[in-house]
Image (cartoon, rainbow, N blue to C red):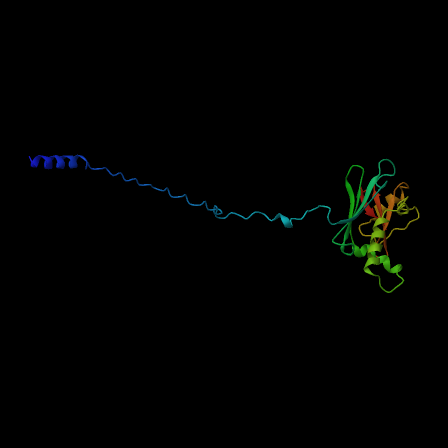
Length: 214
């Protein structure tokens, strides 16, 4: 009978000590994506242009003076010819003038380039001192340009009936000269080139071109 209580106690102890399950939880932390890196420039790629130093370019940037005049020349009546003097260069004392005559149809019938000395040389006759200042020289050249086409420079006839043949004019022949003398309606244009070289242009109906007659 003493054994029964002992067995009963052992049985009760076994029922109260049932095993307990253990669960392991593993937490994986996702690795953060790598920080975005700036894209490397493609091989051979050019840097963006530097527009800070860009300069405006003008076709007329070197034009210092333009003088125009319309006057009959290649014909005594009807539409006039266009006389034009364009002075270009980095400065007045380093410029060059282009002298052109264009007929009413738009054809250029005369073209000549005049240097700055061609326009300045006659200044010596106006000087009151041995030399001129740069400002005086510039003022004289600009005055020459502005007064290049004065009414008094257009003469009719281009060759007077009593005029003698000028032997020092290049490319002027006796036949052309004689033909002009017979045409009282021709018009001559006078201009000074250099210090004392006074020239006269005329349209030759015989040659169909502008010629020098003086």
